[in-house]
Length: 194
Image (cartoon, rainbow, N blue to C red; front, side, top):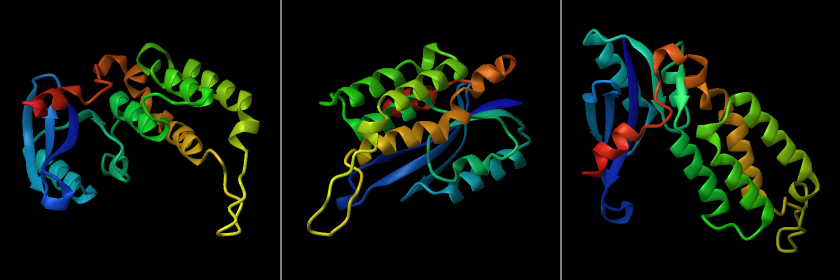
């Protein structure tokens, strides 16, 4: 049984022709078990990788992965840990590295506690944050060009929705301490860096 860490990395630029590689790695042994060169990161690549690993005789304790839509379904029935680093990066993309608005700074500070908190405490703090900022989050701005009334702080709302959606997978490593599940894909990120 292995704790699998899966991720993809890309080289080059989309405009000039990028290529990438999807890698499945044994977290404990730090051994790459399967990889596939790809043009785009797709769920199908991960399905092929899972099938190949099974054919090689491996069984899974758990898998740590990033937020590719549909990826969690590939590993249905296996404990899935969503990478804390990737979740933090998602929030940073929505609110930036240095948010100008206080609610953005507060959300960034909250997500930076992922590695030092429990699921119950994190959910409690997130709920307090949402309740305290409800009127701010519900603000709307009239768009005269389109005649619509969209939310003013759509990016912040999207960041919160991302956290709420991923919470069931952010603390899997705490629910199964006996499995020693890594809470990040850092073993692959450091491997990719060279």
